[in-house]
Image 1: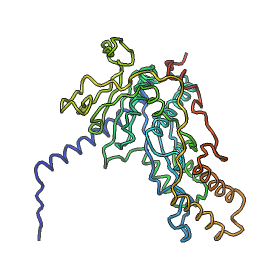
Image 2: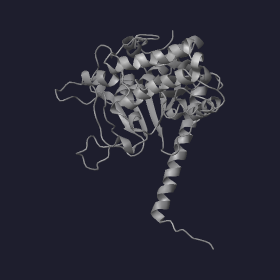
Image 3: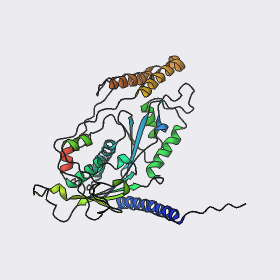
Image 4: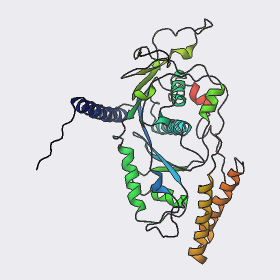
Length: 381
Protein backbone atom coordinates (compact mmCIF):
# COMPACT_ATOMS: atom_id res chain seq x y z
CA UNK A 1 0.00 0.00 0.00
CA UNK A 2 1.42 3.37 -1.00
CA UNK A 3 1.09 6.27 1.38
CA UNK A 4 1.12 9.72 -0.22
CA UNK A 5 2.26 12.70 1.79
CA UNK A 6 1.14 16.11 0.58
CA UNK A 7 3.51 18.94 1.40
CA UNK A 8 2.00 22.44 1.50
CA UNK A 9 3.26 24.57 -1.37
CA UNK A 10 4.54 27.30 0.98
CA UNK A 11 6.56 24.82 3.04
CA UNK A 12 8.09 23.28 -0.07
CA UNK A 13 9.06 26.73 -1.38
CA UNK A 14 10.65 27.64 1.97
CA UNK A 15 12.69 24.43 1.92
CA UNK A 16 13.89 25.08 -1.62
CA UNK A 17 14.87 28.63 -0.69
CA UNK A 18 16.82 27.38 2.34
CA UNK A 19 18.72 24.82 0.24
CA UNK A 20 19.56 27.46 -2.37
CA UNK A 21 20.91 29.80 0.31
CA UNK A 22 23.00 27.00 1.84
CA UNK A 23 24.43 26.11 -1.58
CA UNK A 24 25.20 29.76 -2.27
CA UNK A 25 27.09 30.07 1.02
CA UNK A 26 29.22 27.05 0.16
CA UNK A 27 29.99 28.38 -3.31
CA UNK A 28 30.95 31.75 -1.84
CA UNK A 29 33.32 30.09 0.65
CA UNK A 30 34.95 28.09 -2.15
CA UNK A 31 35.33 31.29 -4.16
CA UNK A 32 37.00 33.02 -1.20
CA UNK A 33 39.39 30.09 -0.76
CA UNK A 34 40.41 30.23 -4.40
CA UNK A 35 40.97 33.99 -4.28
CA UNK A 36 43.24 33.62 -1.24
CA UNK A 37 45.24 30.88 -3.00
CA UNK A 38 45.79 32.86 -6.19
CA UNK A 39 45.93 36.48 -5.00
CA UNK A 40 47.93 37.75 -2.02
CA UNK A 41 45.48 40.64 -1.51
CA UNK A 42 43.03 38.26 0.20
CA UNK A 43 43.01 36.35 3.49
CA UNK A 44 40.43 33.60 4.07
CA UNK A 45 39.82 32.38 7.63
CA UNK A 46 37.32 29.82 8.93
CA UNK A 47 36.80 29.31 12.68
CA UNK A 48 34.73 26.61 14.40
CA UNK A 49 34.51 24.68 17.65
CA UNK A 50 34.76 20.92 18.12
CA UNK A 51 32.18 18.87 20.02
CA UNK A 52 33.41 18.90 23.63
CA UNK A 53 32.30 15.35 24.42
CA UNK A 54 35.03 14.05 22.08
CA UNK A 55 37.91 15.72 23.94
CA UNK A 56 37.00 15.18 27.59
CA UNK A 57 39.81 14.02 29.88
CA UNK A 58 40.81 11.37 30.74
CA UNK A 59 40.20 9.84 27.32
CA UNK A 60 40.40 6.05 27.01
CA UNK A 61 40.28 3.95 23.87
CA UNK A 62 37.86 1.78 25.83
CA UNK A 63 36.29 3.80 28.61
CA UNK A 64 36.50 1.95 31.97
CA UNK A 65 33.43 1.82 34.19
CA UNK A 66 35.07 3.78 37.02
CA UNK A 67 35.32 6.93 34.89
CA UNK A 68 31.57 7.22 34.37
CA UNK A 69 30.44 10.75 33.50
CA UNK A 70 33.03 12.47 35.67
CA UNK A 71 35.42 13.91 33.11
CA UNK A 72 37.27 17.21 32.73
CA UNK A 73 35.87 19.22 29.82
CA UNK A 74 38.37 20.44 27.27
CA UNK A 75 37.24 22.78 24.50
CA UNK A 76 38.95 22.75 21.08
CA UNK A 77 38.59 25.61 18.61
CA UNK A 78 40.00 25.09 15.14
CA UNK A 79 40.88 27.59 12.46
CA UNK A 80 42.20 27.32 8.92
CA UNK A 81 43.94 30.21 7.19
CA UNK A 82 44.14 29.54 3.47
CA UNK A 83 47.77 29.21 2.34
CA UNK A 84 48.97 29.41 5.98
CA UNK A 85 47.74 26.31 7.79
CA UNK A 86 45.58 24.70 10.46
CA UNK A 87 45.62 25.80 14.10
CA UNK A 88 43.93 24.14 17.11
CA UNK A 89 43.43 25.86 20.44
CA UNK A 90 42.82 23.80 23.59
CA UNK A 91 41.33 25.26 26.76
CA UNK A 92 39.53 24.22 29.94
CA UNK A 93 36.10 25.59 30.88
CA UNK A 94 37.82 28.40 32.79
CA UNK A 95 38.17 30.22 29.48
CA UNK A 96 34.51 30.01 28.50
CA UNK A 97 32.93 30.08 25.05
CA UNK A 98 31.90 33.59 24.05
CA UNK A 99 32.59 36.41 21.59
CA UNK A 100 35.87 37.31 23.32
CA UNK A 101 37.19 33.82 22.50
CA UNK A 102 36.17 34.20 18.84
CA UNK A 103 37.78 37.64 18.56
CA UNK A 104 41.00 36.41 20.19
CA UNK A 105 41.10 33.55 17.69
CA UNK A 106 40.68 35.96 14.75
CA UNK A 107 43.25 38.37 16.21
CA UNK A 108 45.88 35.66 16.61
CA UNK A 109 45.12 34.38 13.11
CA UNK A 110 45.91 37.87 11.78
CA UNK A 111 49.21 37.85 13.65
CA UNK A 112 50.09 34.40 12.29
CA UNK A 113 49.24 35.57 8.78
CA UNK A 114 51.46 38.61 9.20
CA UNK A 115 54.39 36.42 10.30
CA UNK A 116 53.81 33.96 7.44
CA UNK A 117 53.59 36.70 4.80
CA UNK A 118 56.71 38.38 6.17
CA UNK A 119 58.65 35.08 6.04
CA UNK A 120 57.55 34.56 2.43
CA UNK A 121 58.34 38.14 1.42
CA UNK A 122 54.70 38.90 0.62
CA UNK A 123 52.59 41.94 1.47
CA UNK A 124 49.92 41.74 4.14
CA UNK A 125 46.43 41.13 2.62
CA UNK A 126 44.00 43.97 2.01
CA UNK A 127 40.75 42.00 2.44
CA UNK A 128 39.69 39.54 5.14
CA UNK A 129 37.11 36.84 4.38
CA UNK A 130 35.80 35.39 7.65
CA UNK A 131 33.61 32.26 7.72
CA UNK A 132 31.75 31.35 10.93
CA UNK A 133 28.95 29.14 12.21
CA UNK A 134 25.57 30.84 12.57
CA UNK A 135 25.48 30.80 16.40
CA UNK A 136 24.79 33.66 18.82
CA UNK A 137 28.32 34.36 20.12
CA UNK A 138 29.59 34.56 16.53
CA UNK A 139 27.13 37.38 15.84
CA UNK A 140 27.75 39.67 18.79
CA UNK A 141 28.08 43.46 18.62
CA UNK A 142 31.45 42.85 20.25
CA UNK A 143 32.74 41.05 17.15
CA UNK A 144 31.48 43.68 14.73
CA UNK A 145 33.01 46.48 16.79
CA UNK A 146 36.36 44.68 16.57
CA UNK A 147 36.05 44.11 12.81
CA UNK A 148 35.07 47.76 12.30
CA UNK A 149 38.13 48.70 14.36
CA UNK A 150 40.33 46.69 11.97
CA UNK A 151 38.92 48.57 8.98
CA UNK A 152 39.14 51.99 10.63
CA UNK A 153 42.78 51.50 11.64
CA UNK A 154 43.72 50.33 8.15
CA UNK A 155 44.66 46.76 8.96
CA UNK A 156 42.19 45.70 6.25
CA UNK A 157 40.55 47.74 3.53
CA UNK A 158 37.47 45.52 3.71
CA UNK A 159 36.13 42.63 5.80
CA UNK A 160 33.47 40.19 4.62
CA UNK A 161 31.75 37.87 7.11
CA UNK A 162 29.68 34.88 6.01
CA UNK A 163 27.76 32.38 8.10
CA UNK A 164 27.07 28.76 7.26
CA UNK A 165 23.37 28.03 7.71
CA UNK A 166 22.16 25.83 10.55
CA UNK A 167 22.20 22.20 9.43
CA UNK A 168 24.77 22.92 6.70
CA UNK A 169 27.87 23.71 8.75
CA UNK A 170 30.19 20.89 7.66
CA UNK A 171 33.26 22.43 6.03
CA UNK A 172 36.99 21.79 5.74
CA UNK A 173 37.59 22.56 9.43
CA UNK A 174 35.15 19.77 10.26
CA UNK A 175 37.37 17.40 8.27
CA UNK A 176 40.16 18.21 10.71
CA UNK A 177 37.85 17.50 13.66
CA UNK A 178 36.72 14.23 12.07
CA UNK A 179 40.29 12.99 11.58
CA UNK A 180 41.14 14.00 15.16
CA UNK A 181 38.11 12.07 16.48
CA UNK A 182 39.13 8.98 14.50
CA UNK A 183 42.69 9.19 15.86
CA UNK A 184 41.33 9.37 19.41
CA UNK A 185 39.47 6.09 18.92
CA UNK A 186 42.78 4.25 18.70
CA UNK A 187 44.67 5.69 21.68
CA UNK A 188 44.47 6.76 25.31
CA UNK A 189 45.01 10.42 26.20
CA UNK A 190 45.15 10.92 29.94
CA UNK A 191 46.54 14.48 30.00
CA UNK A 192 46.09 17.63 27.95
CA UNK A 193 49.63 17.28 26.56
CA UNK A 194 48.82 13.81 25.20
CA UNK A 195 45.59 15.16 23.68
CA UNK A 196 47.48 17.96 21.91
CA UNK A 197 50.18 15.57 20.66
CA UNK A 198 47.47 13.32 19.21
CA UNK A 199 46.02 16.31 17.33
CA UNK A 200 49.35 16.89 15.61
CA UNK A 201 49.30 13.39 14.10
CA UNK A 202 45.80 13.39 12.60
CA UNK A 203 45.92 15.72 9.62
CA UNK A 204 48.06 16.99 6.76
CA UNK A 205 49.23 19.73 6.85
CA UNK A 206 50.17 19.16 10.50
CA UNK A 207 48.09 21.45 12.76
CA UNK A 208 49.82 23.82 15.13
CA UNK A 209 48.46 23.51 18.68
CA UNK A 210 48.16 25.91 21.59
CA UNK A 211 47.02 25.68 25.20
CA UNK A 212 44.95 28.85 25.79
CA UNK A 213 45.10 29.99 29.41
CA UNK A 214 43.84 33.54 29.15
CA UNK A 215 41.50 35.46 26.83
CA UNK A 216 41.40 39.18 26.08
CA UNK A 217 38.41 41.09 27.48
CA UNK A 218 37.54 42.87 24.23
CA UNK A 219 33.94 43.46 25.35
CA UNK A 220 35.03 45.22 28.53
CA UNK A 221 37.54 47.35 26.61
CA UNK A 222 34.99 48.50 24.03
CA UNK A 223 32.29 49.17 26.64
CA UNK A 224 34.68 51.03 28.94
CA UNK A 225 35.63 53.36 26.09
CA UNK A 226 32.02 53.77 24.92
CA UNK A 227 32.81 52.77 21.34
CA UNK A 228 30.38 49.87 20.81
CA UNK A 229 27.13 50.67 19.02
CA UNK A 230 24.06 48.50 18.54
CA UNK A 231 21.76 47.59 15.68
CA UNK A 232 18.75 45.32 15.34
CA UNK A 233 17.96 42.18 13.35
CA UNK A 234 21.52 40.91 12.97
CA UNK A 235 20.27 37.35 13.48
CA UNK A 236 18.23 37.43 10.25
CA UNK A 237 21.30 38.05 8.09
CA UNK A 238 24.23 35.79 7.25
CA UNK A 239 26.39 37.86 4.91
CA UNK A 240 28.03 41.15 5.87
CA UNK A 241 30.51 43.61 4.38
CA UNK A 242 32.49 46.12 6.45
CA UNK A 243 34.29 48.96 4.69
CA UNK A 244 34.74 52.73 4.76
CA UNK A 245 32.07 54.72 2.98
CA UNK A 246 33.16 56.67 -0.06
CA UNK A 247 31.17 59.73 0.99
CA UNK A 248 32.01 61.99 3.92
CA UNK A 249 31.01 60.62 7.35
CA UNK A 250 27.79 61.91 8.87
CA UNK A 251 28.46 64.50 11.62
CA UNK A 252 27.76 63.43 15.19
CA UNK A 253 25.23 65.30 17.41
CA UNK A 254 27.90 67.89 18.34
CA UNK A 255 28.41 68.76 14.68
CA UNK A 256 31.83 67.14 14.47
CA UNK A 257 32.75 64.80 11.62
CA UNK A 258 34.42 61.80 13.23
CA UNK A 259 36.47 59.48 10.99
CA UNK A 260 35.21 56.24 12.54
CA UNK A 261 31.65 57.10 11.48
CA UNK A 262 32.73 56.36 7.90
CA UNK A 263 33.17 52.65 8.69
CA UNK A 264 29.87 51.04 7.71
CA UNK A 265 28.50 47.53 8.08
CA UNK A 266 26.34 46.46 5.13
CA UNK A 267 24.00 43.50 4.87
CA UNK A 268 24.28 41.53 1.63
CA UNK A 269 20.74 40.10 2.00
CA UNK A 270 17.91 41.49 4.12
CA UNK A 271 19.41 44.49 5.85
CA UNK A 272 18.25 45.65 9.28
CA UNK A 273 16.76 48.45 11.30
CA UNK A 274 18.89 50.99 13.16
CA UNK A 275 16.99 50.00 16.32
CA UNK A 276 13.95 48.05 17.43
CA UNK A 277 11.64 51.09 17.21
CA UNK A 278 12.02 51.67 13.47
CA UNK A 279 9.27 49.32 12.38
CA UNK A 280 10.00 47.27 9.28
CA UNK A 281 11.97 49.88 7.38
CA UNK A 282 14.92 47.76 6.31
CA UNK A 283 18.07 49.63 5.33
CA UNK A 284 20.43 47.26 3.49
CA UNK A 285 22.23 49.86 1.38
CA UNK A 286 23.21 52.64 3.73
CA UNK A 287 24.68 50.33 6.30
CA UNK A 288 25.18 51.16 9.99
CA UNK A 289 28.15 52.49 11.92
CA UNK A 290 29.01 50.10 14.73
CA UNK A 291 32.24 51.77 15.88
CA UNK A 292 31.29 54.81 17.98
CA UNK A 293 34.79 55.98 18.90
CA UNK A 294 38.42 54.95 19.24
CA UNK A 295 39.27 52.90 22.35
CA UNK A 296 42.21 54.13 24.38
CA UNK A 297 44.98 52.06 25.94
CA UNK A 298 44.97 48.27 25.71
CA UNK A 299 42.45 45.62 26.80
CA UNK A 300 43.04 43.48 29.88
CA UNK A 301 42.63 39.75 30.38
CA UNK A 302 39.17 38.27 30.98
CA UNK A 303 38.55 36.78 34.42
CA UNK A 304 38.74 32.99 34.59
CA UNK A 305 35.44 31.12 34.96
CA UNK A 306 35.18 28.64 37.82
CA UNK A 307 33.87 25.09 37.64
CA UNK A 308 30.47 24.55 39.22
CA UNK A 309 30.03 22.18 42.16
CA UNK A 310 29.18 19.16 40.00
CA UNK A 311 32.20 19.68 37.74
CA UNK A 312 34.59 20.29 40.65
CA UNK A 313 33.42 17.27 42.65
CA UNK A 314 33.67 15.23 39.43
CA UNK A 315 37.33 16.25 39.20
CA UNK A 316 37.88 14.99 42.75
CA UNK A 317 36.28 11.67 41.77
CA UNK A 318 38.59 11.36 38.76
CA UNK A 319 41.65 11.79 40.96
CA UNK A 320 40.30 9.24 43.45
CA UNK A 321 39.53 6.84 40.58
CA UNK A 322 43.11 7.04 39.29
CA UNK A 323 44.47 6.30 42.78
CA UNK A 324 42.13 3.35 43.32
CA UNK A 325 42.46 1.74 39.88
CA UNK A 326 46.01 2.57 38.78
CA UNK A 327 47.74 1.88 42.08
CA UNK A 328 51.51 2.36 41.80
CA UNK A 329 51.15 3.17 38.09
CA UNK A 330 49.57 6.48 39.09
CA UNK A 331 52.78 8.37 39.68
CA UNK A 332 55.21 10.76 38.02
CA UNK A 333 53.86 13.14 35.37
CA UNK A 334 50.36 11.63 35.30
CA UNK A 335 49.86 12.10 39.02
CA UNK A 336 51.38 15.59 38.96
CA UNK A 337 49.05 16.63 36.14
CA UNK A 338 45.81 15.64 37.86
CA UNK A 339 46.83 16.89 41.29
CA UNK A 340 47.80 20.21 39.69
CA UNK A 341 44.39 20.40 38.01
CA UNK A 342 42.63 19.93 41.33
CA UNK A 343 44.75 22.59 43.06
CA UNK A 344 44.28 24.96 40.11
CA UNK A 345 40.50 24.61 40.00
CA UNK A 346 40.19 24.92 43.78
CA UNK A 347 42.20 28.16 43.68
CA UNK A 348 39.99 29.58 40.92
CA UNK A 349 36.88 28.75 42.95
CA UNK A 350 38.41 30.62 45.89
CA UNK A 351 38.86 33.74 43.76
CA UNK A 352 42.49 33.47 42.65
CA UNK A 353 42.68 34.64 39.01
CA UNK A 354 46.34 33.66 38.53
CA UNK A 355 46.77 30.52 40.64
CA UNK A 356 49.84 28.32 40.76
CA UNK A 357 50.00 26.44 37.48
CA UNK A 358 48.58 29.38 35.54
CA UNK A 359 51.02 30.68 32.96
CA UNK A 360 50.17 34.33 32.36
CA UNK A 361 50.42 35.27 28.70
CA UNK A 362 50.75 38.91 27.68
CA UNK A 363 47.81 39.58 25.40
CA UNK A 364 49.93 41.89 23.26
CA UNK A 365 52.20 39.04 22.25
CA UNK A 366 53.32 37.24 20.13
CA UNK A 367 54.44 39.59 17.41
CA UNK A 368 53.73 43.30 17.58
CA UNK A 369 52.00 45.19 20.35
CA UNK A 370 48.27 45.64 19.82
CA UNK A 371 48.19 49.41 19.39
CA UNK A 372 51.05 49.65 16.89
CA UNK A 373 49.74 46.55 15.10
CA UNK A 374 46.29 48.03 14.58
CA UNK A 375 47.33 51.60 13.78
CA UNK A 376 49.89 50.90 11.07
CA UNK A 377 49.08 49.45 7.66
CA UNK A 378 50.93 46.15 7.54
CA UNK A 379 52.75 46.27 4.22
CA UNK A 380 56.23 44.82 4.03
CA UNK A 381 58.98 47.11 2.71
